[in-house]
Length: 379
Image 1 (cartoon, helix red, strand yellow):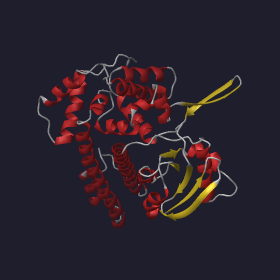
Image 2 (cartoon, rainbow, N blue to C red):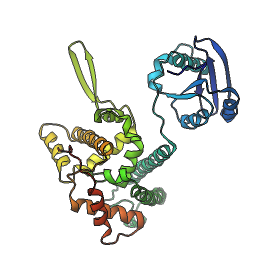
Image 3 (cartoon, rainbow, N blue to C red):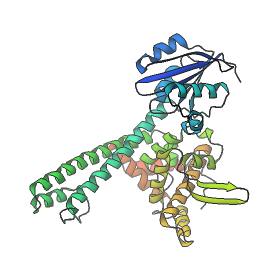
Image 4 (tube, rainbow, N blue to C red):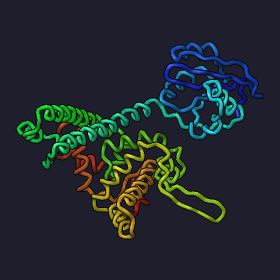
C-alpha cells in the first residue's frame, strides 16, 4: 500500500466542515472548521499528493469528493453505517467525528464505498427525481379520494385525473370549498402526470442510445425507465463478482442470524440501494403478468404457499440475478418472444419520438436479439 504523510478526516455538513489531520502514529498535526464555500481554497492551500483524505457518504459528499481528489493523493468515501460504532461516543462533536475518521484512516480501518463517475451520478439524480414524481402523484390521487370520502362520495370512473372526474365534481352537490380543494388537487395531479409523460419521453430517447438498456429491455417488465434506473443504480457491473453480490447490494437478500448450530432466517435486509430495490419490485409486478418463465416461477411459489408479495420479491431477486448475467456477459434474455419485444420497442419508440414507423420496431428487435442470447436464464 502507498505510504502517506498525513491522514485527514473531514466531517462535512451543508454549511460547514471540520477537519483533523494526523500523522502515521496518530499524532495530531492540525485541525480547523470553515464554511463549505471555502473548501476549494482550503484544499488548494493545505492538501498535497502525500495526503490521504476520508469523508463520510452524505448528501453533498460527491461534490466534496470531486473537489478534494484534485489536490489530495487519495480520497475515500466511508460507509457511514460501517463507521457508526467508531464515531459513537458520549461526547459527540464535529471535531470528535473528524478525529474518529482520521484515526480509522490511519489504521486502514475505513470501509469505503464505490464512487460513481459524473454521468452515473447525474443519471441517478434523474431517476430519483422520476421516482419522486410518481410518489407525489400517488399522494395527490389519495388526497383527492380522501376529499370525496370525507363527504360520503366516491369516484368509480377509470381515472380520477380524467376530465370526467372534474366535471362530475363541478356538477355535484358538494360544498363549494370542497370542490375548490378537489379541483386544486386535480390540477396539481394533471401537471404531475404531464411532467411524468415528458420525462418518460426523455428516458425512452436515452435508453435507445445505450446498448445496456436495450439488452435489459429484453427482460419482461423492464422498459426504458426501468432500464435507465437499473444501469444507473448498478453502475460498473465489474464490481460485483457474483449475482448474489448484486442482490445483496440491493437489499433483496434474506436476513440471517446464526449462532453455533442455531440459524434463523428473516425478511429481506432492505440494506443497500433502495432505488434499485424499488425498480426491481416494480419490474417484477409487470413481469409476472407476461407469459414466460418468470410468471411460471411466481405461480410455482404461490402454489407452494408463499404469499403474493413474498413471491414478487423472490421474482425481483431472480430478475436482478438475470440483470447481472445480461450486463456481465453482454447478452440478452433468450425467452423473450418476437411479438412481445416488437410491442415493447414500438411503445418505447412512440414515447421517444411521438411516432413509430411500421418497420422500425421489428428492425430494432432483430438487431437486439441478434446479440448473443443468455445461456443461463431458465426458470
